[in-house]
Length: 369
Image 1 (cartoon, rainbow, N blue to C red):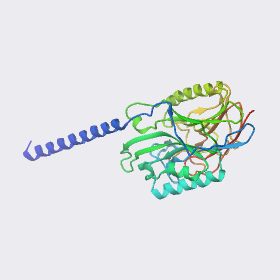
Image 2: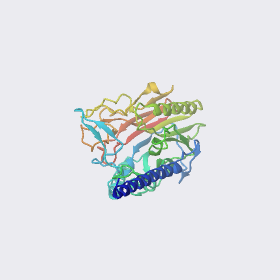
Image 3: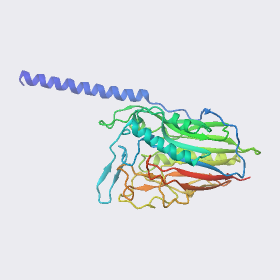
Image 4: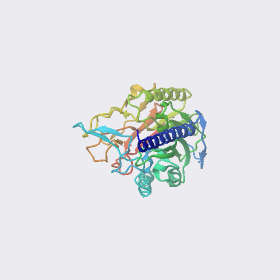
């Protein structure tokens, strides 16, 4: 080997060595930043309200996944994959929102829809507080300010180091969570940790999945309304992690019911609910991530509240491609389940996926005497 070739080989070896050191350093950085929030963490109820719920009165609750303000109709997300019925594979392209202006526009459009519904309880998922992916727009603050007559309780469920992927549009660092707002008095709130996939690389990209409990006293009784705000795992092919999460949820719901409490669970279940897995026409095949949930999966005394329009208005679209009605796979993954001492009906709000890859769901309920 001549001198020039030896120098080139040495230079290549140095570059490879530096690349390996950089990779090892980055993995060490991810591991150093990784942590899980302890189970049974007590949450602050900010701006507390004093009015109490009563039996027999009619109230409303709304659940909505804001999709960190990124998901306009033209948006696709890099972790979403699918397949067209002709066999063409599909995959989203973006790791973050298209712009700060898009995040603000989508968040404000969502808040316009939600304030018009004027809910007594509001359960919001994928709310960013400080994230590269949403251009540092503080949705936690925006949602609290949009409902000045409500308390707000924050359950953090995503806190990641800077993720350099996709390489052309990295997802970045994220601090996000579940925002629960209530027009009525909340005596206590607690964050419960869901089981998650803690395999080495997956744990850096998945959320610190959780559900929160808000305990609302009911005037003239010794009982409470327990509002459970849940966001289950999404990218869980085969549903093994979600099965463990459901088992924990079943356990704690039964415990609250045995205490004599009223229970409402709302949020993004990331399962096709009450038979809607194949309810809507599309030009895509059935996705591998879809698992199903119905009343047979719930503990005794609980049921899903099937929306009156649950088989005509979906609540979630596949984000592997931009949204076109009748093309994307759609189903119902958002909604509510209640204990049998709660009378309830529901409606899926048809927002045409204008500001999120989810549509809101409104619950109307009353508490039995």
